[in-house]
Image 1 (cartoon, rainbow, N blue to C red):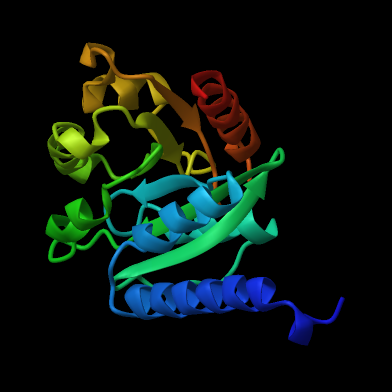
Image 2: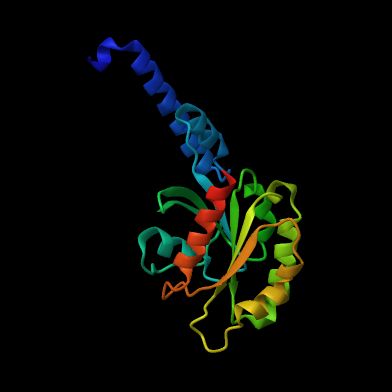
Length: 212
């Protein structure tokens, strides 16, 4: 059957193209892209898991994003705004948003909280001077209603450095043991070497699957 003789197919194709174009325009405008994701889900019955990668500037968020996506270290520059990529892990597809961590950008994190399934919170294990700021930003984030059901995964990053805090020390500094009604876990990672990422993602995948 030719496409020219199938008005129903043509109509469906045009609707999809219109929605796709609208999504591209929305993303370029800096919005969270939830419109097309929800429409695509209703049409095809599947949905990408929406993951945010948050943390202070210099923690290694973008390096982790591209390590997860392409499996190797990619030269990055400080993120001004956001990076968004699709990552497939263990047959589960993630729409991963890496948001800049500079002081001027953090207030805008909340613009991306809607429909988030999990937050990967990256902390520089060597940055003892700003661990208090990391905690304050984490606490404020977790108080947001839109993230009430989001799973929390903390990456104690840069564990390949001698001066790195241990995951236990970092967990206590961030106040993680005091969290109630929140599924969370902390992992020791090194974005540059790739260590710890598989373990963290394995836990996240299994935890997300158990909630479906």
